[in-house]
Length: 233
View 1 (cartoon, rainbow, N blue to C red):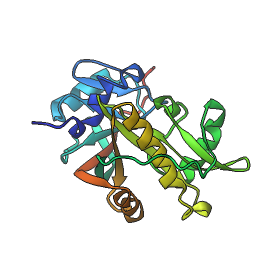
View 2 (view 1 turned 90 degrees about the vertical axis):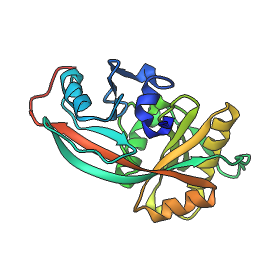
View 3 (view 1 turned 120 degrees about the vertical axis):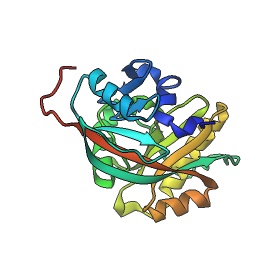
């Protein structure tokens, strides 16, 4: 039986994140300024053909799959990113309060975009903050670390956009921000999970030290339709 997290974007778009998406009973997609990810009820060639008929824009999109996919016409594969899906089933500790962490708001979006463009934690756009619960650490007026939530498939919640400015690594900022998210998710009865690139050994080590466990390998496919004229939104 397929696990909810084997198709996390689909299950998020039919449950906790459905207000941020559009689509049909077979293919769905997030509003592009929120996230580039699309979701298929079944990860098949036929679903990808149908997606081409339904999706109303031509910007690059991402598919998350627990199994390797072939990408048929009319789609062009731009990049495949191999990752790990990790789940947290321990008991989160209380946030320490040692660091000045504050919620991030729309006024912080330019700083959030600058930090994610520098550190590349994954896709992040002008409305990604609408997934919710973004928090950051500042050095005076500079945002130097942040994290938030993204996919919310049923009772699972993804910890996402974990990033620290390179000049501030090794200070425990990411660990404390993640602890805050774990505590918040578990307090509401959720189960935290996250995605990480397979080659990001530093991050994997931090997550394992915090008691995240690898659930499965996961694949991110970034694709674009072969035709080049943008559709109207």
